[in-house]
Image (cartoon, rainbow, N blue to C red; front, top):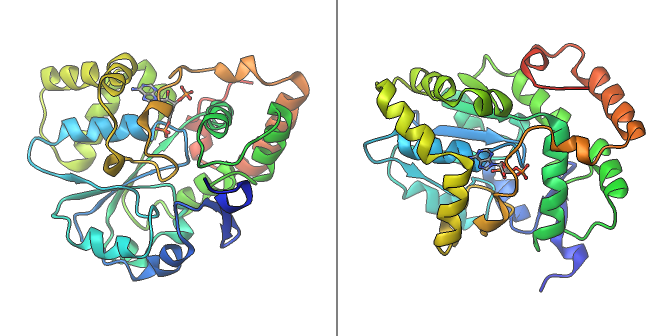
Length: 283
Ligand code: A3P
């Protein structure tokens, strides 16, 4: 088993786990994108697996859902080059680290956003249960790390702002976890319009049933998860993903003082963000 200090390394100022090798991260910029590649982008614990499952059901013809571009060693680039189109490629990379070719070829991206307070709580549990992440002692110490951006994949704020800043460089659809929980059919309709997929209301309602939290959790518990089919670079164990799947769990964790500190930082960082208007952020 890797020692605690071996689990994390810093690349470009951002903490990555040892599952993303420094050599791969260095070589990412030489990645050969294809025009029809589709990126599934998220900060960890925002609903990446949910979005990926919806994508699998939306495409009736064959598509290849790859593992995340930043997961593995440098051989990953060669491996991805053998995968047939259309490739759906998940990533937790910030926009600045995205291989240039995706930008040149104007590949489409779908970015899923979740209330950062719920994201923080979900990531807290991931730190506790995922052996690929270092041990954390208390909620308070983790909370301070999250606000400083000293957690895996760096600051939630910097991640979303990097993608917002460049939203017109590549066609990007922003989806909101809470809006999906409230009205999934509308979200699925938005995705299909963005991708130019024709789909009936009945097909959408079937997809919504198949991708409900309970259905997905039950399927994972029945199957043995396939390590080649992870969509999060931080684990291959899908059983760690389906915890509660609710909105507002942060209220069970944040003290009044922590909530105030979080709100202050949110207001400072997200002051000029247009996306912030759509983010469910209940004080
Ligand atoms: P919780 O830890 O709050 O339960 P990711 O896939 O990016 O790692 O995100 C994981 C989070 O999304 C977990 O949140 C998980 O329960 C939630 N999630 C996964 N599938 C979901 C679904 N079908 N509906 C709602 N939430 C889902």
